[in-house]
Image (cartoon, rainbow, N blue to C red):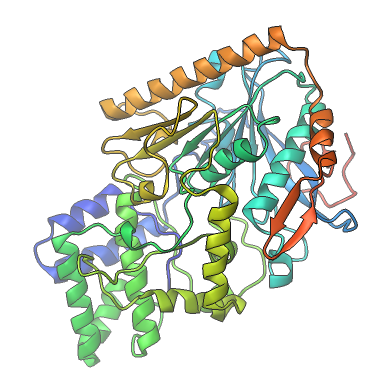
Length: 499
């Protein structure tokens, strides 16, 4: 049987779903679109290599455990650099943070922040998230390794990468670094400014679900057609026999539908696919995963890292989409206990530990009142995730934009002639906010003498900043990573020439 942790679908599916009068017709169309959209790509940030010079690829040797000075283990973290528009060493640096998937060269060549770079002569860097894409430790993805996968570890990587890449590219100490990110990476961008305001000057956080939540029932939108379709699915599952076999064929289910657990997984996956059509209006989909596949510890280098992201939901965020309220149009079988059971089946985590982890995440970052200054939160009002983000300004330096009729991370997508007026206006507002911030940075460069970020970080560590990871506390430190020169393929540790 199959499940769908991170579902994406496009507008054609929406038309088919909401335009179908008969549940059976809707189910046939859904089965067709599941297959079609599984073969599609993601946010529109892929790069057509025809006639385009690829950006530079490089590697950082990062500490596996940046919070333990005695642990010398490391892994290689990939980054991309676009210096086509960089005009001076004291110009701004736009750092595009990767999230729960592979980060390719398109991250620094298309969409945010590459479109904005020519205006300010910015250096654009894309940093792949640890444990995703090619930035996976050689030891694999077993639970012993995954304990070094968290948002706090990712933020430590941002700090050390910022210091190392400043030295590598001879970036001026006074150059402002601005973080960009979407979805989970949008939260990271906001949290990077929150936790390291001396290193990150400002951030644009698109569709950032900064509030962790165990039971995310608010995700589901009420649709009469969806209600009818899910009622039809449940009817066929209960009927068994030929009705159940026909349902399996129509939806392309990869296993038996006879067991209650299989039926709950199917309904949960369909619910996620339909909900994803709203979340990613105009964007594409990822294949469903079985429990057995989620237990595989060998790295998956392309697309979304399903095992890794499931681990992060179990240990930090929750985000489990349920349908237990009467207003929900989908099946009520994939309830919260079945979601939590997946964490136990794959990783051995108890339900109580997951609830505690979600609470600790909100306590550490502040949930929807993080208190971060010079952060712009951008959301679309048809994106289900906007209810976990910040959609109203929290203060003069805590700004927010809510874009009418916009879906998840739509502001980050490359500009298109079909973009709505509201989306165009939102991008103008983002531009104006950056203009204000970079104006402040310019005044600061003139007024204050530059201070080495290494000295700033040293002072912070000397103040004995405490990092809380789970139930233990360790003293914070920053590892100065080894910088490996850009190569066409992932180097083996120690084999590449050091910079």
